[in-house]
Structures are given as structure tokens and as C-alpha cells.
Amino acid sequence: MKLRLPSLHEGINALEETLDPGEIGLDTDVFVSPVAVKGTADDEDTLVDVRLEIRTTGHYTCDRCAAEFDRPFDVTSRIEILRRDPEDSDEEEAEGLVFVGSNGTEADLSQEIVEAILLDLPLQMLCRDDCKGLCPFCYTDWNEGTCEHFAEYGPGADAADNDSQE
Ligand SMILES: [Zn+2]
Ligand SMILES: [Zn+2]
Image 1 (cartoon, protein in one colour):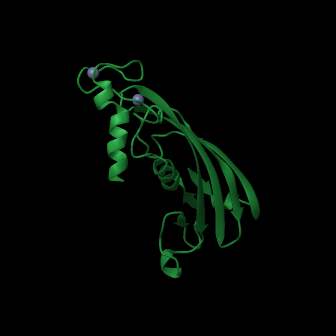
Image 2 (cartoon, rainbow, N blue to C red):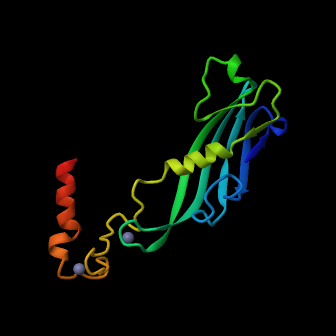
Image 3 (cartoon, rainbow, N blue to C red):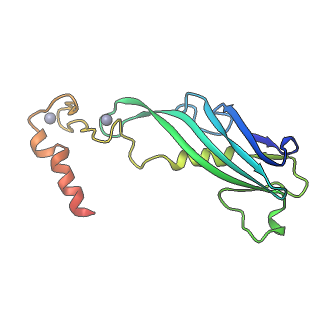
């Protein structure tokens, strides 16, 4: 997403754009629907304060039961566009800061949008929080029913183990 700085007027500007996931660098095997971006850019002369709401959907395979599912993303991002060069600034280049130089006309926000989405990824991708998973012995889907192994190896037994390690 490229923001044309000369097109902004002083104060609050409304932003709305629909992005192609591949074009901003997201994995198109996972992100199969467009990325909807909506927000404001507050132009304060040397700095443009951008706040975005970002919505999309990722297609995943559950880490526990291997079911395929869609996970919605609804995240926010705050980006400060600085009309100066990093070397003229006390601030380091950092997440959420985009330097465009004193005569810069365009700020590319794609990287910041991708980071906001990827930050929202949990360590474990589960079809639902309480997914019981598959039996490692007979592959029964424990979300649908139990097998002879469930009592000993099911998530109840696991959870007790995991809790004591934390
Ligand atoms: Zn699952
Ligand atoms: Zn089993």
C-alpha cells in the first residue's frame, strides 16, 4: 500500500484500500482473500500519523487434528511517516516508523501491514481453542468421538503434563 503524500491535506485524511495479499508480500497459499485496510492519516507537517484497521482471512491446517479452516484477522497498526531522513533524526529506524526523506512523496506501508498481520499469528494454529486432536495410535478424531486410547493419551492427560512444566 503506497500512500501519496502530496495528496494528503493537513489534518485527518480518511484511507481505504483493498490490497492483493501477494502484492504486499503475504503467502498466497495461506492468504487467499483480499486484505481490507481502513483508517486515517493525520498530516502534521513533518510527520504523518497513520492508524489502520486491517482485515483479512488466512487458510490454515490445524496443528492438532489436521482439519482445514479459515482464520479471520482483525488487527490494527499505527505507523508514523517521518518527512526526514533517518540520519537527520534522533529516532532509529524501527517498527512503526517509515522515513520518506524531507522531499519524499510516497510512503510504502506494505511492510508494516504484513508485520501487523504476522504478529497476530499464534504459536499453535488450532481450528478451535479446545481442539482435542487426533489419536496418535489409531487416528480417531477426538473432536468427533473417543477411542480406547483417549483416557490415557487424550488432551486431559496431556494438559496435566503441560501445566506442571509451565
Ligand atoms: Zn483441530
Ligand atoms: Zn486411539
